[in-house]
Length: 212
Ligand SMILES: Nc1ncnc2c1ncn2[C@@H]1O[C@H](COP(=O)(O)OP(=O)(O)OP(=O)(O)O)[C@@H](O)[C@H]1O
Ligand SMILES: C[C@H](N)[C@H](N)CCCCCC(=O)O
Ligand SMILES: [Mg+2]
Image (cartoon, rainbow, N blue to C red; front, side, top):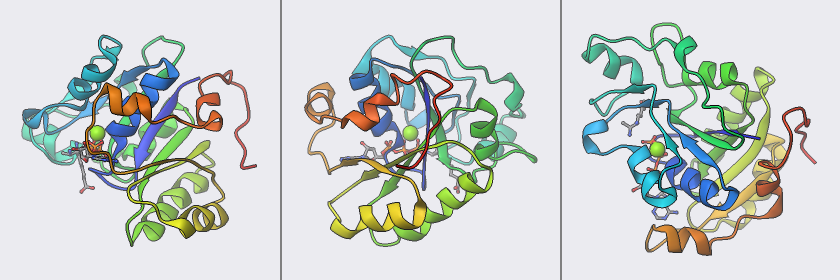
């Protein structure tokens, strides 16, 4: 089984969560659309953690902007039908920014996620404001009846957040990643995912995802 990792925002921890999951789930990594390549790419970061199990991006643009304008700046255009999943058994696919990020004049990141048909993991902050951002993202996914595997909370502990998001968002919080002093293979290895999250990678493709 493979998953599509999105987030409530850019810079929210999608790559961190992706590297962490690839490490523990023995999974490959694929970032179909990367912008801001000058600053360094997510694939390069993840390759530092899981070495050579990182697949080449389908689209790579220099400008640290939304994919639709970063592509335009290079006289290019993103055609989501050209994005094919690498033929591997376990794959973590990372989006860019959040779900409503435009890829071209017609498609948003959520359209790509829907086209790829993978269960979606939503990375969300634990900061004030996250309830709105997270529930809006879940609303968008549920409105399209897309398979939502669950939420990964990233940031300082916030006791009531899990229960509130599970109640209103009808999706499980599958992991809570604390602020890490260092981000490397050792620190990610030491952070153990729960069985519910790892089981996602052991499910076969026709398993129904439902909120327990
Ligand atoms: N739990 C954490 N502890 C420490 N640093 C973190 C944590 N989560 C994220 N970061 C740092 O915050 C920055 C943004 O995280 P990350 O690159 O994973 O965001 P992203 O959602 O993948 O962004 P993008 O939309 O550009 O792909 C990175 O420098 C990352 O190392
Ligand atoms: C450049 C950044 N690191 C991401 N790759 C792209 C983020 C696009 C965000 C668009 C937006 O929501 O305003
Ligand atoms: Mg990233």
